Image (cartoon, rainbow, N blue to C red):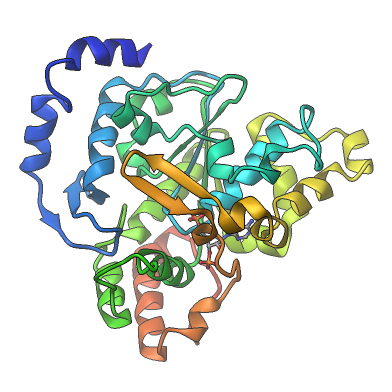
Length: 331
Ligand code: A3P
């Protein structure tokens, strides 16, 4: 319905003139991102292409009480969270032999990206699936997400050092004509100049929201899921309103979801080794770029002790008062 409204309003110019004017008035910079400028919008550096969708979503997105919104900064575990959530929600439709996760990357299984749906004028809902995704910061989410009872948010994040290393590899993909040197990339990320950065502020907003509204926002850490996947898959299922029954648990259903969505399983599937994923018209990714190492602590192989200490100092400074930490320090 939001899109009928949009269609009527925006036939003459897309995006609307006022959206274009807003964007052209914003600070703009080159940051650690795929080949596009970042614009500073409401405190966060948003990719120029996504920003149109972020603003349109703020104006038009109407949350539903059944919506479950999966949120993250890219390279924090989005692909994994989508796979886990999809496997949990559809476990009565599919099993570990016929799941669409075996033949499509999880981004295709959970196709609705709120901000990109608005750019492409696509529906914001998938038939029979309550899952939607976003990279938008908590404070920039459409107000109806917060105001609609029942609508829930699951946020995943990761030690900033590992997110950074994953992002650095991703933006320096083989196609990149102007690769970022490590030192330059560290500088940009630590200054907050990365896709949806400052990373620390993005994480902190969702952390605080999860403390204030635990029934609305579930805050997950990549490292925690890695160390105890069964516990966190049960927690995720319960939060989403799809709890595992005791009978399901005794049949090993939780373990099956964990195994189906594991890095080892998904990264070795043909579709994820050779397929491609088209996020929007001019943005296509090799599926394998979403599956690099899937490890905790890979930063140790790249960052100098000084670089790692810089990340940890920012974490300490930004997060200490909130009680948030990752316990994966450089010392
Ligand atoms: P690395 O680059 O450290 O290997 P996103 O999905 O947000 O883009 O994040 C990508 C990161 O998650 C990559 O990290 C990728 O390897 C890892 N990843 C992808 N699928 C995963 C899975 N099923 N389990 C654990 N990690 C996964």
